[in-house]
Each structure stands twice: as C-alpha cells, then as structure tokens.
Length: 118
Image (cartoon, rainbow, N blue to C red; front, side):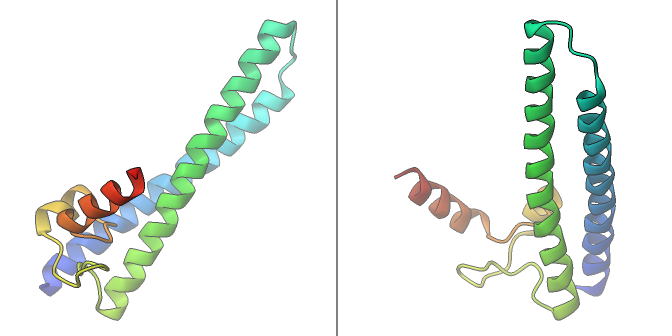
C-alpha cells in the first residue's frame, strides 16, 4: 500500500477513534444522569432501566470498535495494515474505505460469518 493511502487510512481511523471516545464519554454522562433521575413509578423505573441498558450496549460495542481501531493503527505503524489475517492477501481499498479497521478480506469474512452461523 502506498504511503499516501496509509496516511489517508490513519487519518480516517484517528478521526473515528476520536468520535468513538466522545460517544463513550457522552454515554457515560447520560448513564450517570439516568441514575440521578427521580423515578416516579414502575413505568418510569422500567423506562430508565431500559435506557441505561441501551446506553451500556452501545458503549460496549463502541469499545470493541475502538480496540479494533487501535489494532489497525498499530498495524499501520508496523507495516501490516491492509493485509487479511486469514489468507494474507491484500484487503481491497474499497473494503477498507467502508471499514478501515477490517481484519479480513471480503471472501475470508464471508467464510468466518458462515462458520459462526453453524
């Protein structure tokens, strides 16, 4: 991969990383404010509880994505970025544009998804 492409993806990953960190911080503040809310009745309590679970699920998913982004950024620094971890072929530029932290080419990703469903 060319240096200009690596720079492009590094910038893309860094921007996404900053956005995720902000989202996680915002979600943590939202969860904290939900704890402080006065709960009037059982319906209010159920609503607050549901909102809290949704916020925690989103934060958990974004934490996983953040770890994948950090891994991809380290691969850029170490020279392994854009190479499928399964077949060791190049991951297409188009796939990386859609998911810059992709670990697998599209063919290997499909294999993994089919295996997981069994």
